[in-house]
Image 1: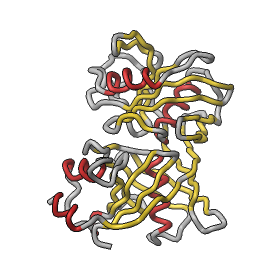
Image 2: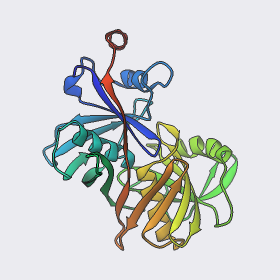
Image 3: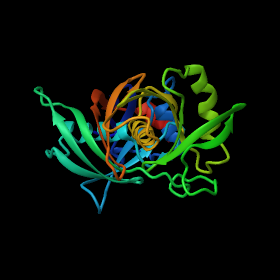
Image 4: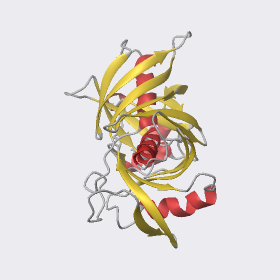
Length: 289
């Protein structure tokens, strides 16, 4: 389908999937922003583009709604997997996908209706070093490091799961508010310690194997859920001894299950939904050109 799209969400974190070979326009930052605009375009938390790969069954590029490119997205990978299955691009239930944040393995869980309504994704290994994040701090690891943001003194743990994350914990029994997220999210995302910006999670341990997080995504802002953020926060919580694996990660949009191996390899399992398929109107595409 010319200028076709597939729209899905993972716990309210929504993406549009497109095949650039079927588009009559290029996915430039300006065009990506136009398509993702919730008032003037389709509206989404980003665009997933199917691309060739020499290392995996499929290749994926992930674009944020501000036009920048992300290395990896856990929810995006589940949506991409459902798209591949729903559109007949694969009949496999197990396959590999190459992202800029590394190669991942996906297992689809097909329900009685024949829909891939959930997926398990091998998300790679968490790393806590400044070089992996990247971060300008001259320390061996980014475990419980001080940072000042939005007029507040905080302690953060820096984690890379193929893309960068800054996790800030409050003790169990306390809570973060949405106002905290709206203040601290952009301040931490654009902090001078993170030259390529970072994703942000405000986290609280809520049980021996459970955490709650609020999410501010680099290039997207506040989101209802995030697979890579869940992986980062879960691995940080395990590393700090706040919880044990497997970790249930609760977010405003719902729940993901993260297994954190002793070597910090991460496996994520969660639901995924299809919302719509269609094509952009000729007049909208002319506006992009």
